[in-house]
Amino acid sequence: MSRKIGITEARDSLSEVLNRVAYGGERYVVERRGKPLAAMISAVEYQELVRLLSGAGVSDEVRGIAVHIRFDGDNYFVSDEVLNLYGVGASVEEAKEDYWTAVQEYYADLSVNADSLVAYLKEHLDFLRKVLATTSEAT
Image (cartoon, rainbow, N blue to C red; front, side, top):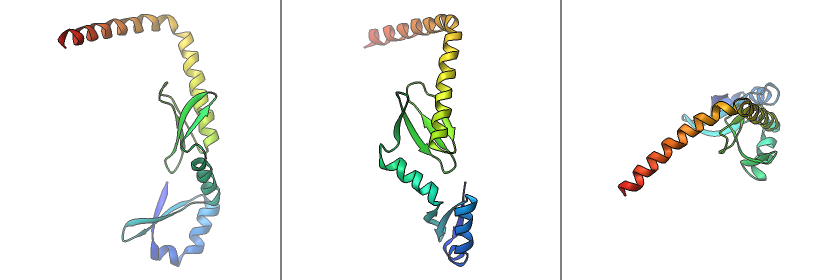
């Protein structure tokens, strides 16, 4: 989470704020008249953001699965649009590993519950066929 600080306060306590950012892991949003002007993050976080944005941008792959990576200011999130799974971590690698664990658990759960899923999916498929038949008759 970032802390808001006015530009005058930031200037007057720059040394202290920089130490908190560099060594304490704090983040600051410097404001002028209540509007964000700049952000202060550690050099490590800055390098990680540059690395993320320089290559593929916010897309990547986790063992063959196309994923999106985003950062909310506190954590990285890795998610996909196919399985609708996600992973969270303090670093991109940690989020990717968390995502991969979710994928493995998802497929393990599918294999354990395959028999009960067949009936459930068949019921929904039959329902969709009825809806589509009704829709095509109406047009």
